[in-house]
Figure 1 (cartoon, one colour):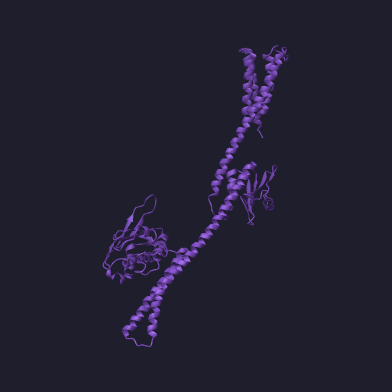
Figure 2 (spheres, one colour; figure 1 turned 90 degrees about the vertical axis):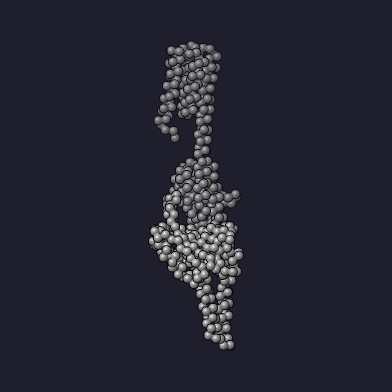
Length: 484
């Protein structure tokens, strides 16, 4: 409804314009009938454009009377002596009213165009919001609030044929009861109540109805409501399809992982089990064995049992890390003692490799779980020894790096070897589970889980694990840890 103040102002401006043209044209400038008529028409057009058709029609009648009384002979009376002046007066009145109607239509068209543009902008914004989530349940909880915020309505409810719940923008129902939502979904026809300003729209994808939507406190057009319903239906269908695709992809990856795990673990388990079985069979055999032979067979059983135990431990640890079930005890710890403990554990393996340690004495401590970081160091140093020729040195360095782009200061620990190196293609694969170098699978035993475990541990500390390598010149594995 137009406000009373605006209505009064419109009539007031119309009266002032008629009075001003009459006073100035009749008393001072002595305008002729044609000029005064054009000025009256100009005022009628202006009032119609800015205020409305009612003010313009009233102004047209007032201008006609003033034009007749002051500008058409006999002047000073409402009597018209010349029949041609009747035609002029009638033409003036018709022109004024017609011009008022045309101006009002143009103004209404402009207002409608602006409203449609605003609705289109809101629809575009709403469509962008619908892309914010690919989870169907989360999206259904967000959609009602998005519609309320975007289109300035009082309340929204959404129901799907495949779900029992009704998703609302607020706890209040506002007339959007579940029964009406179900009826609209079953019938597939919209319902509008102009008195209560409640609308129910079916959610369609093509000819298929997937649910319904209720909107309370809305003056949105039917076309806009249908567009909103279509966007909601497409977004929900997209989220459902994405979830199905994700589940299918997860099942496929799980099956692939299971196959790779079985293949890798079976192959690696078979070797120690074969050795243990052969040694045990030899000890239980009929023949006699010298103490040296017996000790050698028992040593094989002991070493292969340790290897088997380690394989099982790696598989279990990888599963725990993948499931985020490993908790890290992060404390401020110097790096050098952890490195020395790792070297002590690998003392037998490193007898044929000189180790050089370059760790500054003033190096700051890092936040770490020392047992887990020692596990990372043991694996990286062990790899450096296994893949390097006898006598090749291994260098361990640590350095502090300043913060970059608001990131915290990090400590970088590197293990360099003189092994065969890793080509560019394999550098992006060595940290994947169960992957082993193409040229090392037979020469060096392993499951391919070690580097994947190291990567998960380092990332759990907030750091990164990487490498640089050049064929024929060795590799440098490095990882970062946040400083304390």
